[in-house]
Length: 192
Image 1: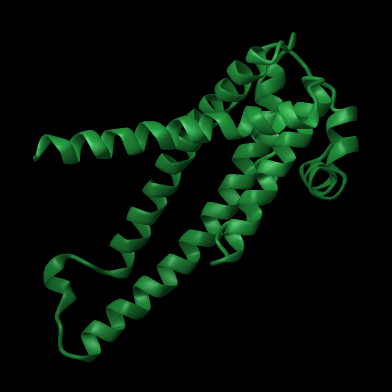
Image 2: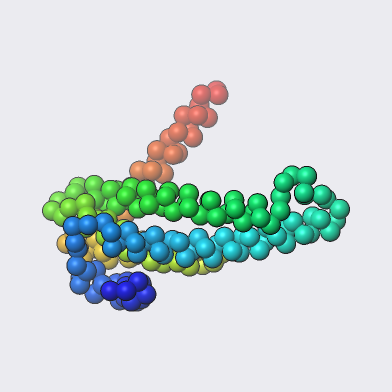
């Protein structure tokens, strides 16, 4: 399936998408899908950031703040954003594996017999809504929809109940929040 066909199917018919998904023993297809999604998101985000940075630079110059002494010019802004885009894609690639690992480990708790590659496919294709993550406020809706897609994918591919599929997603979040809160409390208590 071509990228846009896959994107449209996972976004608008996720149950059938995950039911019909042909899992291969390679990471290439889902990785390319997820990285394309994130690259489009990053490109749009960085174009918006570049435009805002140029306007800010022009505004600062118009009120007699000389930004040239800071080495800030349109070329340096563009280069920095371009480098950040490629660093971001590498971090996203690593995050895809971490997210899939969490899905896989927590699916195993609920007795899933599937392999890591199935969890990887779920996590990468469930990232489809991230294409619109650059839209303020709506990005939360798209993040929530991505979680819904993960639940659907886990249910379809790992053959878990809806409740267990939800727990596969929620438990790592709750554990992470609990650990974070514990660290804050311990840090605070260390000062008393």
